[in-house]
Length: 67
Image (tube, rainbow, N blue to C red):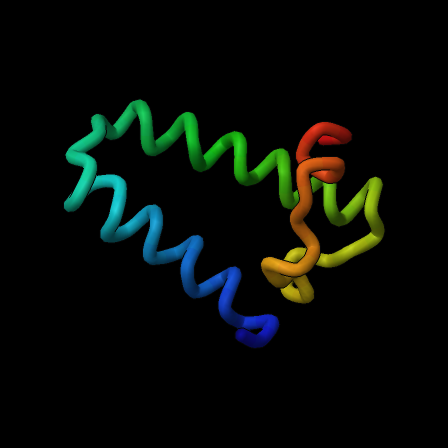
């Protein structure tokens, strides 16, 4: 996996998985989107990692708990 994988899979999560496989409502997708937006802001402002540099390696239980 490379640094682009996280952005790719996050995009697929919102465009394919949630609406197509999970059949969730638009409000659920908006809620998830808003949460991920806050998570990306957290990484940028607190962890000093710009969203375009994020990879799956940046995520751990501790990071999510800190968020």
